Image (spheres, rainbow, N blue to C red):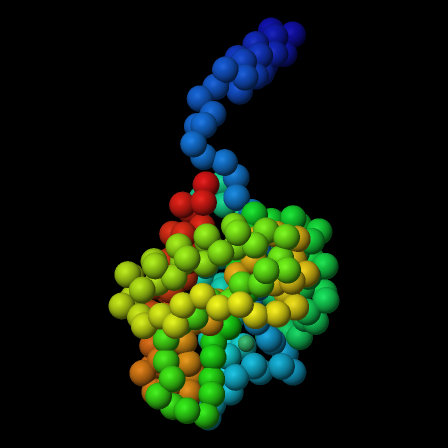
Length: 206
Ligand SMILES: [Zn+2]
């Protein structure tokens, strides 16, 4: 009985703390979906033995692993080398209703000289202005932290951007077709650094 009383008092104390409490007014919980492009039968860009789906999954997992902030909840559209349709990805996103969707990709074209990061947004997205603001932030941070060349923000009618009912940005992290970019993108240390830069921007959203 005595113990039960103690527990009740303890609960009341905890409860009252929760009520008055130092809820840090500046911080809030942020939910983010990181969409690792492609997967399974869909390699995405592939040059020699290096595939987009692999690079992107590595970076995506690093973002999730590096996150130690309980106020940042990270969901992935795929955890593995599996094929997930765009419709399924968007359905998941719209079920989660996140504060942000980042769809990660790498570029590749015939012209080997093309290089740099670029960002796609779409004005059919219901949170277009927010998407744009986040893309600008990410762009600035990536250039600053990694001395990367940026090709800037572009408009594109990308399914996931159009159909996500949340701010959404498609990030192209470099060109697999460019030797320098490829070296950067396939370097494990650089992948970790990219992940921490992305996490930095997410943290600033709180
Ligand atoms: Zn892609």
